[in-house]
Image (cartoon, rainbow, N blue to C red):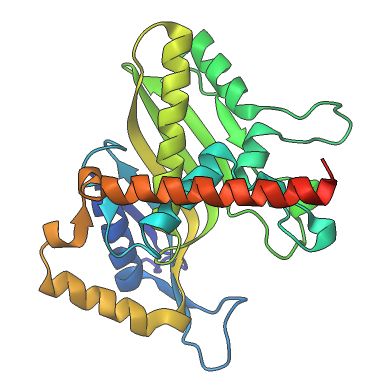
Length: 282
């Protein structure tokens, strides 16, 4: 008789992000190994944990948004803009006790000791794909061993890998750790938004249409924390009482909310910039 895996390995294929995320968190709950975490408080149940390969056939197929995501549409749009546009890169200031990095900063301005200029890895990916769309070398690295080893909040995302198949851009996001219920959907949503940006940049470079295609979400530790099991069980009950259509949004259904969020974010960024300008004395 073969021994059970210490950490179950889950593979899921889905048509869209909402379906894929939902099936992934349910699989983690049902099949996950029981193991403590470094964030547990006394009395918390052990987390449930799997390694995950989620393959979504079309990153922008609808319905794209799951109603059970953490926060709301505003939070989702803020996070998208953080990853894609770097709206909070100016919050990076570890010496002052602020953020140690952002994913966008690591992608667009990757500093390496001994190299004078930071590396824009997104530009590299587009250039590599333009030269050979089938290349296996178009990737973005997030981890910095000389900075991240031992810090309080090391990067969960490790790398992004891009490749073109029949004028469809595939993205594989590789994460060392991912909170399945509280963070994974927002990660997937923002990473696929970046996938679309890269596809648009590549289209302009090649002079032909490249569209976002398959999205792979690869995680070493995809976990549900024991601290919120009660909340997660409420989510499971909603799966029994609501149809899939009642559990998701198409983008069109919430476009008004997305537009409102963008206006509020722009206002907040303008106020933030005004504060920084006053502090600099410009």
